[in-house]
Length: 117
Length: 114
Image (cartoon, rainbow over all chains, first blue to last red):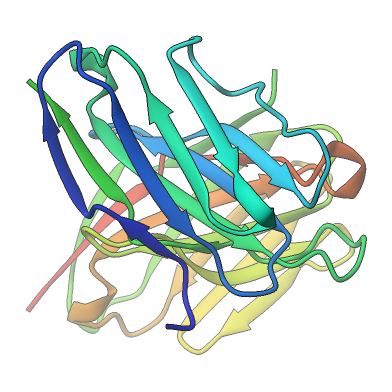
């Protein structure tokens, strides 16, 4: 497809388990972002990848959260020892970096709905 | 601290009516401001983007305004339709020198009733 895809679309897990969320960005997009959207809350920035540069991890809420981006394309967000407060929609977005105007639009995936019981 | 505040939090209007959503921000540096529409269960979709020098931008029935001096933006929806029911999110970008980081508002949940 032409858009950003994420999998799984829904994930239910038990407290303490690890989960992996996957994001396939738009082909050719060098920038990739992960966000978290809790129920009734705004979007919260988690991590940002740009090409081969070191990722900006400033938004990760704890060391239980980590993300990788292999080959500059697919990204995986891993949450270890999940807690109930991790329940949220995890959104991935990608953008091109053709210029330096800062106006590159981020295209969002449909999100992964995570429920930690 | 960079912040984006939106009002109202929720809004109910009748089909065919107009409405205006507000966004106030304290983000520095500032590069551009975007409005996104997020349907329930979907990711946000970009509606408009405005830079510092632009004070109005239209996309069909959506018109966004920006006052960079007062750091305020509005999104006006004309002749609302049932399909306009969604959350509308105001997003401010710090631009290239800020790593293109975005600060998101909490959104306005709009419901259009027949």
